[in-house]
Image (cartoon, rainbow, N blue to C red; front, side, top):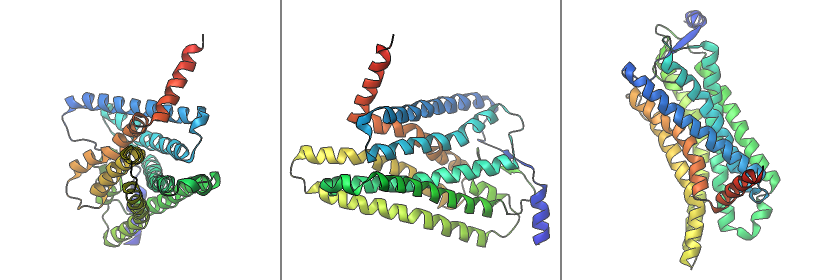
Length: 313
């Protein structure tokens, strides 16, 4: 069986990304939608990083994390969107074996890194609201750097483990991946081996990655809500909740879509494709809008940046 698996694996030189099963006339519409969303992702996230790096007032832990969130959103959407748009015009819709491995590896890296970064951002809000007098001491530049570096390190470790276990599977028969990018479940369907042990390992790995971040986020917000409710003035409560509502909204959309896609029975491939759009394209597009529209500092920094550009002859 081992020899057969190796032979079948070595024969695979490329895959076919099936994409959305719609009429060919709709491919132009889907291409335009993807193009518009991706353009907004580029504009929003590059703009957010530019604002944070150029305005000294935003040199705080919260914006340091937010800048890295924009960086992650920009790159993992760029791993998915360009290839998906090309395939709307391509007859073959093929992706090389190496290209599929690279896409899978980078996507896993940035997705896991984002989960840990969101947990770090929740901890940052917990310290800011529950221990404001100690905020500058506890959230030092060194700790912030360590939290971000740890997020990327966890992403790298998870990516290597998931990629190695997925692409050592023996792929038999069809090369058609029923998705618009190389994702774990569609790739599993192409394997001719018994997936019970592999799925158990994959589920265990996902749980080890996901549970700590969820626990940190939930516990942080339990303390935040408890602290905010003790604030006597309604204006104070409103301001405190406003600083957290954006982050909580992003977390809810991202984790809700991920849970539905990866932790529910794999029975509805087409619905999974639509759901996966939430964390591959919609969330990266909305993050800059959510954080900028609800953030006075970012809006003032953007206004200042635009005024400086207009002042240049």
